[in-house]
Length: 321
Image (cartoon, rainbow, N blue to C red; front, side, top):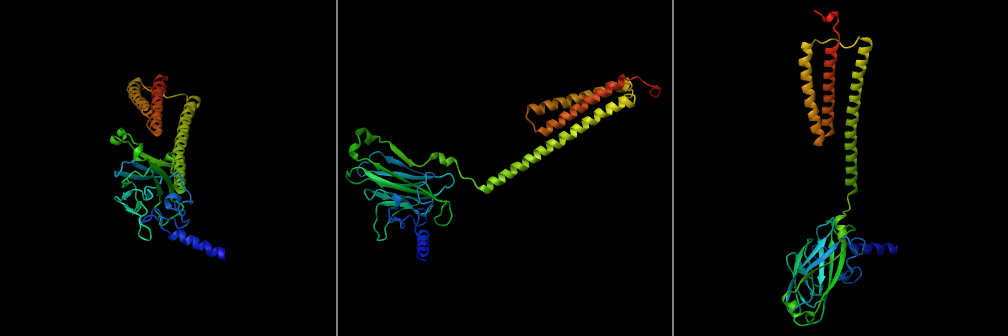
């Protein structure tokens, strides 16, 4: 009974605890393990551990800070499936943060500011200003937590988060050339390859597979049907020729005055369909077009052949006037 009660209380705390991408911003202290959120993340998201599927980046970071100088940092989250999320960035109170659009200064329950900035609502590409300390305090350490969320209510297993730590060197590490033209860096953590391997919906995959099967069945079904019909027609023509020669005495005589214009017409039509068939094949037209044009060409050739055979047949008494 005690274990069941403890489990229910633990789940309730996890569901009620503020999270990195909630509208009120993340908590400074993780209520589950009492560690800093920027260092431990939020165990209510995902499977409770950092995920390299989230690429957390911060740009505009100098290699060394100048005393009292202000720098604009841009915090960015990248994920293969989620576009928005939340963040928490801290310098542990060494410098001063100024919140930009969509961000806010983090305060603890007693109203104090631990030196951190977070989002105000799930979004992305936050721009915050960091002002270096007024004296040389040595290198400054930063911690950044980023959480890409699936848009569902509350924290769940679909969310992924990652942690990034970096530092900015002290002013004494800069040379005179660095002070005049200091390059700014972009620092990232995560697996960039994972951005191109989105987890697809199994239902969408099954629907796509069924569509491919239907399309393949329709295409092959038409191919088999028309091919079979063509074979039957060719067989019928060959059989007719055979029976005509075997039992009908051969083709009937056709007078040359009729055979010549008929042969010319059929020859021209056959040439036209042959040219159209060649065009369809060369230009990659659908197989149905090429198939029909090919069959018409064969039928035209057979017509020319029949005209020649009938013109050469010997006339019989019923063919004479």
